[in-house]
Image 1 (cartoon, rainbow, N blue to C red):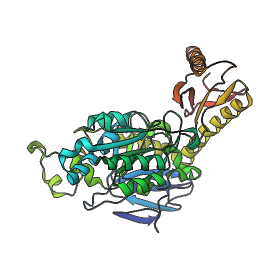
Image 2: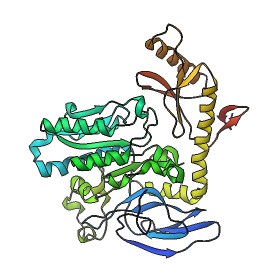
Image 3: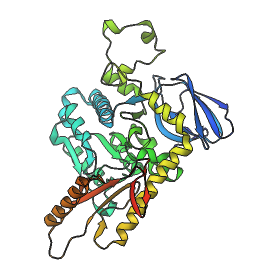
Image 4: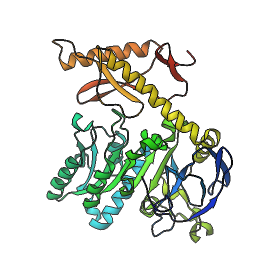
Length: 407
């Protein structure tokens, strides 16, 4: 996934020491000043990457296996409230970087790219940072790519925009899209964005948590080509709302976009450059101690249990998937990759798409009104899909039925 002789890439400042105890490995987080235990095979959440000229560093909660070694990390990590905030911040940084090269008058020429599976927060963020709505490019996906963004389609769109003197600014690739759980090919998209000079953000809000398991880390291949990566422990990693982890290849770009230095906030520590002012890494001035609740999850459960939790959710989804395959009334609309299953009632003879969609909506409403289940929906390739997302610790199989252990 990320490689170097130490198992980390672009390390800014790190102390390496042999450590551990029977049944678990003990690590120390420099920004907390306290210890945590990770049982079994060590997975570290705070991975130092490319500090840039500032030397400030940045941390990506990316789950890198470090075997029997303990790393002590003495650099800042950025915990935000949501992916929406991460997108706004990184898109603003990308905008300012581009305008510094092309001139502020070019803001109406900047283009943002997403697929029709990308979360709507990207479009909202583009509006908030001044990108004209006409310059928000939604790239169509098809079942041929399992509804993942096509690098060829992206390259063609960028070439067409460049020919019209527009400037490719920002591409959002997703690992586990909200509608369908699709995975965009990060490596191929990274080469396209590198050639164009556009900022590549990887939204791993949902499925990034699955990458704590070695068998799913290949979905992050090429992540070293990204400018930023975000993931949400509050989605699938047993952490309470809200907690989003953001990694930046070059934090200086973000700081230059968001920094402010009013007189009433001036102090010797900040001006010395020896501390990090997180007000310059986010929109708000104040920040909550989000790191603490993530640390508590790691301290309480450890890596073995967290990996077991992820795998259990996926196994339950596989079971539901098998039931759908066996039932001639239902069909899957997209291949399952994680713990999200998208299915529907099959079209009946003589029924058009509108009628099939209406029948599936009626089924979804009946399911949710029963009080025994709750599912959501999406439209994938024009078809109404019922979404069953499994992630709770109490979900299990009873008498062949998926249900909560409290039922």
